[in-house]
Image (cartoon, rainbow, N blue to C red; front, side, top):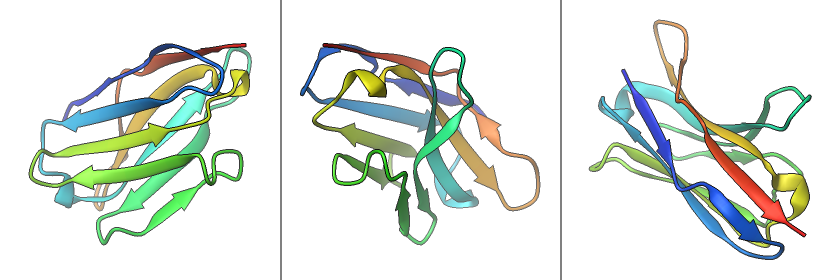
Length: 115
């Protein structure tokens, strides 16, 4: 399974981005899909997840500013980020968790927020 993350880039403080994660497999086969991020020198942290049933979960740091969604027909998960801050600067990774093996990770997409 391959996860192709895209949509990152340079954005100004207060701006918005939509990240996409396109899977090479049927995303309904995954128990959970999510977005994680890793800033330089820091650990990789969860940003948002969505289960196969549609339940969502967000990190406190992005609640109210982020929306995770999935398009099952396109095998794609999205992360809409608004009101971006410099603290949101990180490499964003897509993760897919199957029910019977370790998780898959995408290659990451850089998000840089300028102040």
